[in-house]
Amino acid sequence: MYGIFMESVVIFKNYMGGRYLAVLFLLALVYLLVAEKNRKRRALFLYMPLSLLLLFFFPIFRKVFVRLMGDGDTYYRVLWLIPMGIITAYGAIKLAGQLYEKKGAWAGRMAFAAAAVLVIAGGKYVYGSQYMSKAENMYHLPQHVIDICDLIAPKEGEPRVWAVFPTDLVYFVRQYDTNIQLLYGREMVEPKWQYAEPVHTIMNHPTTIDIEELLKLTRERYCTYIVLPNVKDKGVSEAPENFGLELIDTVSGYPVYYDPVAAAIIEETFG
Image (cartoon, rainbow, N blue to C red; front, side, top):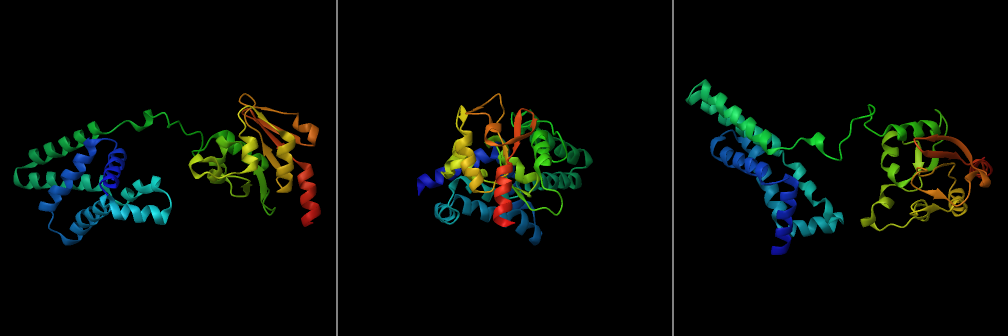
C-alpha cells in the first residue's frame, strides 16, 4: 500500500510541474479553510477538492480505478476534477480583499501584486515547449493533413471512404473529417496497448513498404485510398502504379493514391 501511495505522490508532483505551484495551491486551501465562511463556497473550494485529494492518494481507490479503467497511466486525470487554478486565484483575491478592508487600499493592492508575481514566477512559458508550434489554420491541425483529407473526402451525399494513412498522420485525420474511415487508428499506434494490425505492420516497416502485400490486405477491406509515408522517410518495394494504383497528388512529400481495383470490388460487392 505504501508503494502505491508513493506512486500517487510522484504522479501528483509530475502533474503540478514542480513544488512551487503545488505549495501555492495548498496554501490557498489552508487559508480558505480558515477564512471562508460561506457554506456553498466552502463546499466548492474546500470540501470537494480535499475529498478528491484524499481519494487520489488513497491506495485502495487507485487500485479500484486501475481495475475498472484498465489503464493506470490515466490516473492523473482524477486531478483534472480539482479546479486548482481557480482555488489558488480565489484564495489570493480573498486575501487581497480582506487586507483592502482592514489595512487599506495599498495593502490589498500589494497582496494582489505579490500573488500575481508568485504565480507568474512559478510558471513556464508554454509556447517555448518543443510540443508547441504556430497554428497553420483554424483547426490547429497540420495543413498537409487537411489538404490530403480534402483531396480524398467524399462529396456530400456520397458514402464514407476507407483510407490508410502513415502513422504520423492518423492522430489528425478523424479530428478533421469523420467521413474518412481509417483501417487503423490511434489504438494501433500506441505500443503500450499492444494491438496488432497487419496493415499497420506493413506501413510501419522501418525502411520499405511491401506494396503487393499491402494491397492484398487493403483490397480485402475495401480501402480505396492509400497515403504513403513521406518519400524522404521510407521507400516502396515496387512502383504502386504497377499494381493499378493511380497517383492523385503528392502533398508535402506524401504520395496520395486512389485504388480503382478496390473501387471495382466495392461496386461489384455492394452495387
